[in-house]
Length: 429
Image (cartoon, rainbow, N blue to C red; front, side, top):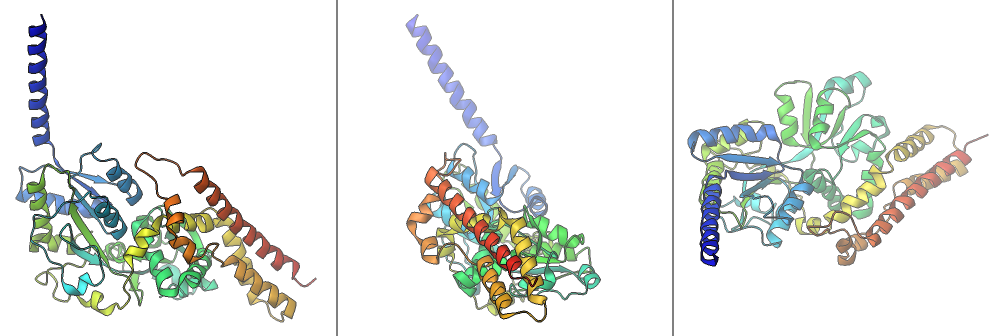
């Protein structure tokens, strides 16, 4: 009886191993990406036409969810990762989740100076810049010019006419916020972001919704990555886009997951992305990235060469969670009160014949509304950063982190309420 049972178990084991191997072989090449669905379709279709025997499965996730998925690997098998977020690839590389690329690749020097994560594990397939997308018809209707810079967007004439997303919802926005903080400095940068938030009509859940709202004429302008604007310009001649003078350069990265069992097929896919055919699709499709192939675009180095600002992406990666939660506590969760406060500050500043006491009150109110509640040293502290770094199985922050978030949110609320009190009490009777 024991022999029969043992033989049965052995047969069952071999059957399971056979089925598993077959299923593994039949499993499609899985691509995890933070890029949108529409831009990926032409690439998938062209690759499938060239390699009909290789099945593809694309998983679209926002960066925070994609990062969580990779932390829980191999619950969900993934072979290739694609994203424009340097922070995402910093994390994957430092966690040992990437493998050396079995593909010959070398990014041009004019692009590598803008990225410190390009190595034998991470390649780039193209790049983008950031700027302001605007709706000419909307702005003409309201008689206001198109903003060209972050400082422009703090102007009271844009009250209620702007939109943007949050860094917690968008890897691109994370780097845009860092662009402001590193270019202008911590305190001045947050002052610009806080005052700009007072001019927002809404805070969008995703970057694509920012460009959609502008194209539809719901708002007049907002900061965005260039490819979203380029896609709308194909359909609407009233959509305009201008790069920031110190636009950061955002390469689109691709890498192979270390535990992938389909490295050969993954290599074929990356080789296709780097081929002239793949590069042309990347450039001319809704992906709308500036290609690396000079065969496809001879002047492909202009934007990267014309931009002097170099983002410290290591610093951005280390403190990205702190910046995300800080943005949410100061702006997202206090948004209605933030809008009201800046509206009243702007109205007070327009008044004529102000008394010295009124001027002092307005200046104090402005200082309170534009004050960042922690220093850059605190944001860069490993202790602060550790509080907001979640483990793979951690859904909520620790009690200590939650208490700090409450303290930050409450402090901002108190500052805004104090600013309004100053404005109300200093009004002339």
